[in-house]
Length: 543
Image (cartoon, rainbow, N blue to C red; front, side):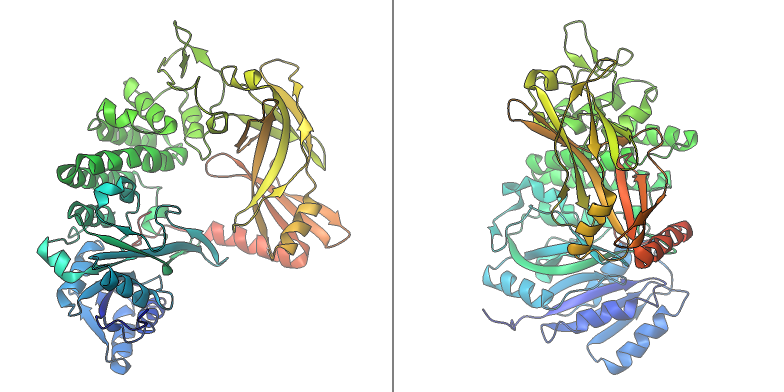
């Protein structure tokens, strides 16, 4: 393979008030080597030292050109368009001022684009949680390294990758189809740009290389757009951008338009619903925006979605006001979904949401057991065990013969889970499910984490797996109950002291922080201090 393609790339870097980070971003683009003939950095009228940093870099790097905007655009689309207007290379890539391009990214993308004559080439992207350094793959399983997708309609799921930064584009292709970003203050501009690209039906080449590192700084003074969900205006912007993307795709190919709407139901809507602010004013505004957003969907669009997405959509469209059990709905929107009791049935015996809102939960009777939104509650049963209660779901677990329950712990940094021992389930004294007392030995879990290279504070997501007599099983995220939550200081023969902190995630599930020894305790304190200082940042990366 040619390691240095003859064609070259313009990397467009956009920046606004990011003097402390933009240098690293620009340097990562220049470090791509000769395949990057120029870096165009667009300073969107920053009021800090961003412009001075870029000018200083340009003075020593001839490949860097700086464009200074006189007025702030209010968004990310206009500066990217300015960068494309200044570009001279045959290919263009995009980079945000707080992210980086890993070594070899541009070379790999250009090589694939040239080899397969593809106007678009795409590679892997990770969301890197800082300062921990934990990498979370973006859109895993959507692409296969080395494949060539002849046209997007052959892979409607491509609409789920809304990023523009993990791709390389042929500038002639973009110009021919007049593809640009929305100008001005348009949040989630990636949604519309990506829709315009896919609507133009390009051949797409896929590389296995990591081509983009998206930095996620949750404790920064300003958080990125995808994390700034405390303002209902963020949801309004996302709905508007999604509608425009669906319109563009639907006009090009009905399959792509429907796939975009299904993505909204299965991905966007649950994310915001499970983190719904409890403030009544926020919920009222969110409800109105969401109902208006769902009006453009047909029953066919809703029926094409998975159970979670289509049930949520029908529930939100069924009443004139938010359901009384809105908190139950937000819990159902979690990942994995969890449907709390009571479990009502309609006149025909079919499963429905509630007696007050008898929306049918179609497919419940035939859904594979592994996909059922089973509800599990967990409470403290002493220092080294917890008591779980598994709720039956319209008789499905009883029919399969619910037999054992087991705890498992998923490291938030990725990797194999740590598994507990299965314990036999017993019928709940009050009826309606089963109970079991499961061992929770946090000292042993901390040791397992250290052996796997987890240093400082360890973060684990808790899961409960229920296995049935017929061999089927289901795993879900339990809901903490009673006095389970709260920090505990435990003596440890290995570490001297072990801090254990069960806590409730944003989605309402149980998770666990462990801080073994002085190093871990310090990391836990720093983590809590950082989260306490966190503010809201209007950033540039939509999720």
